[in-house]
Each structure stands twice: as C-alpha cells, then as structure tokens.
Image (cartoon, rainbow, N blue to C red):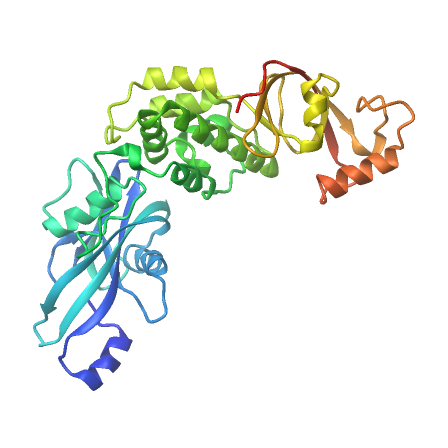
Length: 387
C-alpha cells in the first residue's frame, strides 16, 4: 500500500520511530453482500481500508477510499466500532500504531473494479460465503452487519462498553427514527412499491427491516412510532418530487418480503405486519395547536393543505407535543389557489379570501406559488385523543 505523502514527510523527522495514526475501514454493504478488495501487498481479502489524511474526517476517508480503491460511490450510515490495532513494524523498519474507525457504508452506485495499485482484485461476496479472511477483518464486518445502534469500543480500558447485542431493549429508540429520517435519495421515476421495498429513502430493505423488527421485539409501540415517522416524512419527500408515496400496505409488504435472517431477535413477520396495520395510521396530518379545541368539539372538520398527499380513510391529527387524534378523512377536493372562494374551502360566507390566502402563505406555506393547487380535506372525529 503506497505510503501517504504526509507520513513520508513525518518520517524525515522521526525516522523509524512509532507513529500514532488514524485509520478507517469501510464495510460496504448491499443487501446481503459485502464488497471486498484483495490487497496487492499481502494477497489478503479485506474490506476497503485507508489512512485518515490530516484534518480529514474518518467518514470522508471511507467514502474517498471506496472510490479510489474500488470505483464505487458509498454513503456512510454509521460509525460502528473504534479499536486500537497492536503496533506493527514494517519490513523497512517503520513502526506504526493505528486507531481504526469501522464505518458501515451503503453501496450507492458504480461498477466495482480494481481502481488503483493497492488492490489486485475486487468483488462482491455473500455474507454467508466470505473468502478466507483474518479474524480481525471478520470482526470489522461483523460489527457493521450486527450494528445495533451503539458503537463497539472493543473493551476500552476503564470504559463500560455500550454494546449490548444480546439485549435489544437497550437500543436507544430514537436511533431508529434518526437513521431513517436522515436518509434521502432522488425518488423521481420510482413507483410507490419500489420506494417501499428497494431501500429508496431508507425504505424497507434488510437494514430497515432489522430496525423495525428489533423495535417490535423490544416493545410493539416502538415499531409503530418508527413506521409512523417514516411514512410521514416519506410522504413529504415524495410530494416534493411529484411521485406517489407508498401506502402502509406497501411498507408492510416490503418488510415481509425483505425480512432478514440476521435480525437480533426471532420475529413473527406476520404478527409484525398485523400489528402495523392495526396501529399505524395510513397518514398523519399536523395541525396548529390553536385548532385543537375546535377539532375536539367537532366544530372544525376541514383543513386546507398544499403538496401534502392525503387520501380518504383513517388518519391521525397531531398537535404540539405527543397528542394524537384519530379521524377519518371523508373527502379530498382539489382547488386552484387563484380561484379559491369561501365555499370552496368551507370558510364562512363573506370571508376575505385575499387575507385568507396571505395567512395561509405566511403561517404555513411561505413558498406557495400563485398557481398552486390546494387540497381541501374534510374529516370527522373518529376516536378520543390518545396520549
């Protein structure tokens, strides 16, 4: 492996003395396979590895090395392990001590190939049929595949390891939501079922399936909260891109189809699917807190939305905090903003529509154009609010 220029410059001053260096290992996953390279110096199969340049973030190193060594574009999903590699002395007498950062990466694009002189071969391998590898490299792959939301500190002295693979109940629940809502892809041209089942925007693929299933194993409500947050955000992203968002059934189908054998607990997928259909509202509608009382006493039964795809059927209204109100959307009518009238939006007769539109823009949709199409959503209270 070529020695980085900054290390060569350091060696001019320290000679063969021990250097403390940072490294990054990119475990690149694509469904149930991992990308490996065969090193030119040792002939060993390993994940993509590299030395962190001065001032560079280890995650940036992982992305850079993946492109430079294997010709693929990846997205870093998480830091999964930090460990100290024992000191080693090279054939030229140089000594080095590495702090390695193992990063779980998602394959995005590119045909894997030998892209520089550091490798002699590159290939995708099933996680169930890996080539002969050293235990230390297998440990890095295992850390990425089995990642449960906590970083493996590899027995750091005096530090209690947060790792708890045999106790999924300790996984921070908010990790699920953050991981899904941080994801993003260009959805243009994708169908609803493709979005839900192929992993676009964090849609159910093996990793998402594992998250939902693990949450279900911990506490069913955790799976409910995860999928509700996913659907709500996904609908907004799909609306922005002008594509249809997947339904709850699409998501459930994706989870069932892509159920992964490496889930941390044994999951009854049929039971999980039944639970989600029974508990997850197909759509969530955020309401201003000032409308709460009118909604609860039944005097407010209409809301006007822009670029928020809502369909007739069950729905959940949310206010500030965690309060949720179950309703049933009875109808959705489309009205052009330019031709809006009191009757069209179920407003009181004589309402100043110019003031109405200005308020709609300033309070809810600052970027709404004059040729916008509004959705007038009529709903009925379906159940008492639940905490």
